[in-house]
Image 1: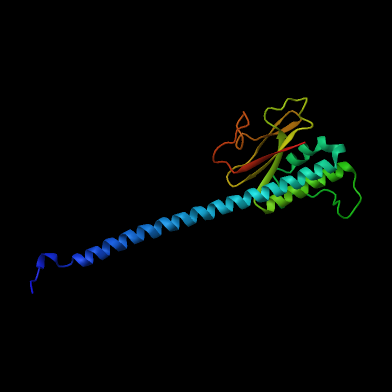
Image 2: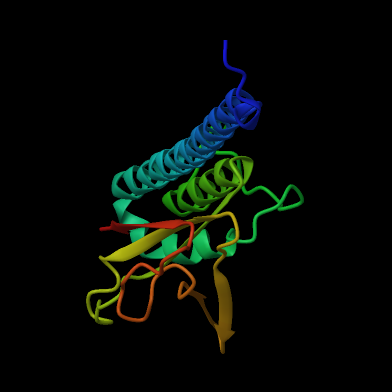
Amino acid sequence: MINHHNQAGVGLMEVLVALLLLALGVLGYVALQLRAFDASAEAMQKSQAVVLMRGLAENMRVNKTVMGNYPAFVRSYTGFSSTTSAPTNCFNSVCTPLEYARFDAYQAARNANQLGMQLTMDNCPGVTSTMSIRRQCLYAFWGNTSPTITTSGTTTTANVSTCMGTNGVYVAGSSCLMMEVY
């Protein structure tokens, strides 16, 4: 039997290299799982935002006589918090169309707040002032993206540039959705 001393420990080195490769594969799999979890959470946020915005849009279509008042009401609840005062509860009392509009905006803002979102409404990008009464855009924001409300004179408008650029193109990396409401 020939004893080869210069090959001692080679088998152990092969096992260590195999374990290193296995560890790299497991780390890659863990990173993939974390990315899948983030994508799933983002999809859930988007789904919830669509449900909220669609519900408000349907309420606006039902209450067409005061549709032009919805943007101001929605913007007034953009900074919604637990201390925001509630309007007349239209679930338990008879309300005018204007009171329904305010209550719809409040309910949508309250539901959005419970999900960690904010809602606002403004003219859609590219819409002229003559079309703006019928075509508004509803925005849902969450995460680090938030609407900026600016006041000039008596008009309060939402600056949605953190979500959409001036030309109406989605800003990469922002957490928001836009829905056209008419």
